[in-house]
Image (cartoon, rainbow, N blue to C red; front, side, top):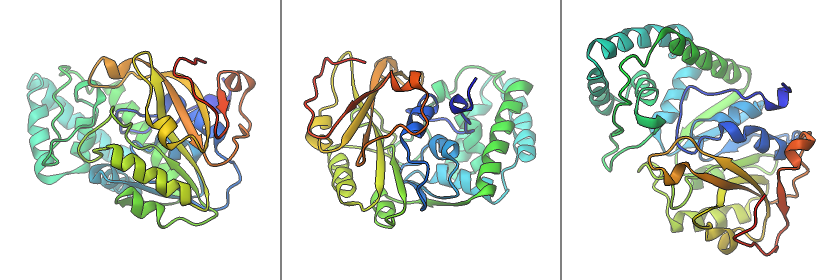
Length: 310
């Protein structure tokens, strides 16, 4: 398999994770920008860790995501410490027939330990990351007491090791802050990648996204001096994203079909047409020809038709 398609998978999962879209996003990103790779919505971090920039600003409004990756950067979370923790907690999970999950969840909601965050993220229902209005993690157990088998723990440890190596090779800064603060501190040489919660689809109270947020983001990005890429949803068999025409029609857009396997409802796990919005003409840097053939590029001002397909 070509190196272009190899994807580094991070240890944290979340709804809307771009694991299967990384090669596409990487093909659009200019390979020779001289500034920082800036993500106002870091999420799992899968895009940044596959771009592997020399310098990066990775931010999110979810403090637990930021604390987790800060702990890796500070070498408080290592493959060795993760293995020890998951073996111990996984054994208690198995012996309690799953009840220990709720012990860890209560403990995490009280203290916010990043090790507990990892445990919950990898043993909760359907890989969701969801919080209640008070900021408490509220996803139920996945009903698999044997969840942390030796092979699964090794897989997670390897993911931690890969991310640690990437962070240590570059200059990576992690911030818990609003997207507007992140975008307000960019330079002309930087490259912004935005993956906001998909409006009318993803909400976890740390990222409670609505029309006002979408409009605010569009306004910020229309004024930036650097290049940007934005991920959003174009539509599915039920409906089309109404903000494609309302907010993003002045920019370039690439479309591609995709299927999400993570989501709380069946509706959110259907095939969807993804869109990448850019303020520069995508040149599809080094993208394999078969990947380019799957895309549709729409220039600014193009009329979008809801029933168009790839």
